[in-house]
Image (cartoon, rainbow, N blue to C red; front, top):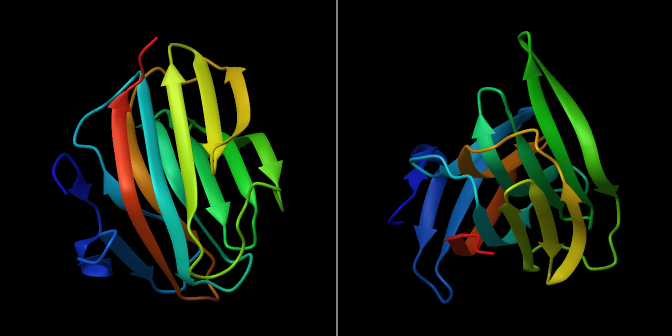
Amino acid sequence: LPGWVLSNPENSTIRSQEPPELQASFAPKNLVHSVLRTPGAFNDVDASVTVRFLEAPEGTTEAGIQTRWSTDGYYDLTFSAGGGIFLGAIRNEGGTSKYVSLLSEPEHSAARKGLGVPNRLRVMHRDHKLRAWLNGVLLLSIEDSSFQSGLVRIVVRSEKEHRNRVAFSALQLREALG
């Protein structure tokens, strides 16, 4: 994957099918796992990825995109196999992380639910403007200046009771223009 760093190669497999996809699988742990990340920071960015849950009991696993990721914090857009969509700002303050919800929809109407079903996530930052889409449907468009630049990461969030396997394809990263 030119232009990306594989964060957990021992948990990832690249499948040469159509479309090619990166499959990641993680043992049961209550953690956010970075699958891919950019080698450098971005400020104005347009990032999108198609996500398919292959093994994930409903409500136990989320996958998505983190943007403007740094030690100060980041934006986090994730989707679950049950159709939930979540967007938050995670601020790291004094050694603790504080989650500020910007969007929380346990069952969004734009979601395609179930295992093996593709869903397209997209996040765009331009200056202080933040926009997010699910399957081409605009989820929100807000002004937020919490974070100015940082890495872009593709992530899987899992709970400690369930193993998961998630596939990512059609990854796009561009500069967000005007």
